[in-house]
Structure formats: structure tokens, C-alpha cells
Image 1 (cartoon, chains in turn cyan, purple):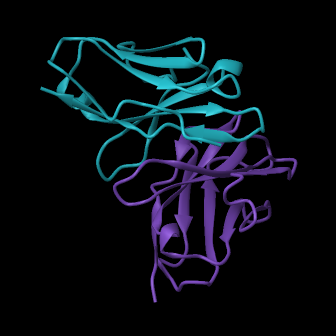
Image 2 (cartoon, each protein chain N blue to C red):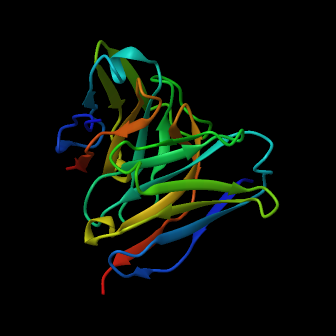
Length: 110
Length: 118
């Protein structure tokens, strides 16, 4: 299984919105509504931010939202804040009943 | 609340077997949920290793399948990872987590660094 494709880096200024894409195939992202997003600060374990493409766990800010179109899922962060600076990873269920991650995107808040 | 904690040797010799345990507290591992392992080489991205269902069914990353075993010990409320014939490429931070639809969910361990070196 190949890793999902994410941009290596994105950046934005405080208050702005950014979108991180996650591209797979019809055998993963495009075939199932089981896409999750994780935030990871340096030296910390990843934290679940979005599951089931669009759902936020309790306690996650509503500035974080997820969507999907075809084989590409997206994470949008609105009203960027300095503490949003982190690495973000997407993941998807696959047709062989495994999981697969994206390569990760480093978000810089300018 | 549910907490997970990884434990095991931090240093493993090449060609030997890496063995890690994840102890779950605040939840009975046999009550439901699925459980799994994820790893992250230093400075790199996340890699999905595998999942074990509370039924005992297991699912592994095809690239690791020949070397990986995940098992559960309900009496100790823990689950384990064994990875055989390790090389330097297996050096990574290893995380355990609860899994939903094969994907890590909201409960993660803090991670444990395993270095493969002679």
C-alpha cells in the first residue's frame, strides 16, 4: 500500500484559513468515509482532530473541519492561531482492511 | 479516563526480536474497542503497523506482515507487539492506540523509542 500524498508544508498568518490536502486512490480515501486527521507537536504523541472525514472529537476546536471530494480529503483550519503550528497527518481505511497514513504536512504560522 | 502506556527495551540488536507491551488503564480491553500499533522513525512520518480486534482477529501492514505479531492478554489488560529480524530501519518511536475502522482514535500512548543497534 502506498502512503497518501500530502504537501510537505503549508503556511499562513494568524487569523487566516489554510487547507491541507490528502490524496489517495479509490482503494482508500475515495472508497470509504473513514479518513482521520492528526495533529502532532514536536516531541508529543499525535492527537486525533477529525475522524470519519468530517467529525470532530469532543474538545477539538470547531476551527478544524474536514471534507472529501473523490480521492482527495482535506483539512481546513480557520482563524489560524500560533498554537496550530504543528505537523498534520491524514490516514485512511483501505480496501485490504488496513490503515495507511499520509507523509505529513508541516504547518507554519507566520 | 482511558490511558495507554508502552513499555519494553529501548535498544534491540540487529536480527533480534523487538517486543513491546501496551498496558491499558481505565477501560477493560475485552469490553470492545480495537487496539493497534503505529511507529514513527526519527524525523519522519507515521507508519501503520497493525490492529487486533477484541475478537482476536489481526490485520497487519503488508510490508511488515511476515515479521509482525500482535496479541492480547486480557488477564493483564494489555496487548503486545513482536517484530522479528529487526534492522536499523526499524528504529522508531512506537505508539499504541485504540483503533476504529483500522485507524488510531482518540487514545494514544506517549510512545517509546526503540533503537536497533549492535
